Image (tube, rainbow, N blue to C red):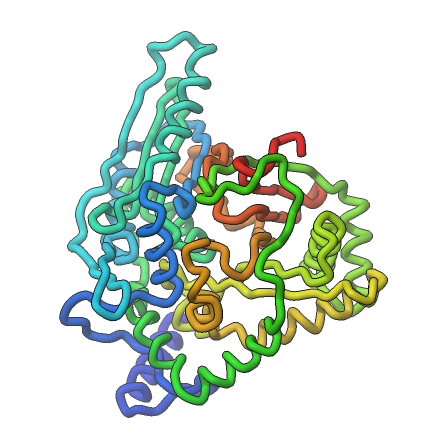
Length: 446
């Protein structure tokens, strides 16, 4: 009964929108599917990524590699057909960008096949296969996209044994975010099963597209509503330091290379349980505890009384956007003051209030804030903060292909956008902390 009810609600929402009646809980313009005669304006988030890409040609800082180890009888043809179907379903992957008179434009190309680069490494000595697979994965992940003409989904399949493979899927952040990853992996699994068995897969058509969201966003963020949101963030960020003065191993280059490295540590389960108990005791969440601790560490290393960090959120404030593959995520700017040397309990209380206020005003994209408040610093690529903390969903990156056993495969980070980016992930054995760092500033041992 669920699907017919959803269809009825979709129809009702469409009729209300066509009549010019906004949906309950929404403010201003209704979020609906639109007709586009040609290239459409990019979203604010896409526009800033586009500006960075134009200012740093050849950068891979916004590449999104997804690597997996596959064990079993893989149906390569079914996998290829599944990737083609994904591109046909989601126009994000076949969107190209250009510079218009008033900003970045996005244009959608016709669907076409995904080129799956295949390498059979079984002719090599057993000991050399893994090393060659690692080299090929790194080399491919370090290949930039041309946003003006490339299909924004790439695939490479390496065969290392009769029933053992390495799969690399790549896209670009300008059309993709963490929420999109969950959609793609679920659909890829369903499509593969269908093509392998010859059973048609009836996936619902995406209700909206990134272009619909971008047009809605630009119409929503205007007039008094935009001014109210901007006023909140102006007050929150007034007088904030322009940069995070971390002690670096090498002098900060005039032109950053954004070359990156990675460090990983595990927080044991008993310690994680204590952190969660601390959060509950203070009416906070684990995320708030970790953010407060992260900022406290940054304060100690920099000696700065004001610490700003970024934190990515899904940004899908409307239920219509839940099935859209695209760059809809937003990044919040969280600020803490250490001038009065607060105890951690006080810091956590302030962080809770800061987070709740930021979430209440999350509709304005970070990129719009930058364009309004720090346009002069766009070329730096990190105009408001240089350190980020983003919680990771442990279930997001699970991919299933029939009876083939899959496990995530780490690809060394070759580039990163920020000085430091911390990704905490809760696991049964504890809390996994993965830190991306700029290797043109820090050494691995640091």
